[in-house]
Image (cartoon, rainbow, N blue to C red; front, side, top):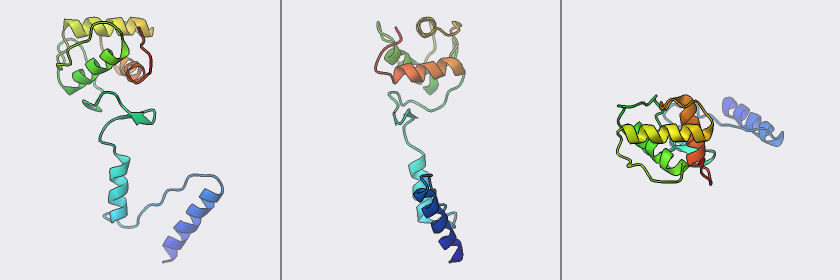
Length: 136
């Protein structure tokens, strides 16, 4: 009982002082911990406090010509939401059309134009796809 009183007192002190308080359940399989874990892991990616416009995957691997799968579909969706003009087929295949769109996006965003979707391009794609305007 003393341990929970200390936690509650600490939490109350932090809240009253304007800080954030987080309660940690004592039992690893307590219902409160299970509920908190579910709440902390959204089913769809979250970007800047809102739901992401594309929800194929949360993985961000390096993509290039010949890549395929859900990460390519995610990138294609982001490209479609970032730029005006003809939309890509969200088919999960990184072919010549996706390569051209990637290079166009990179030029418009002012980043390295190499046709590869790496960390920098992912970052810009996430930003522009979830923005209210287009990069070009």
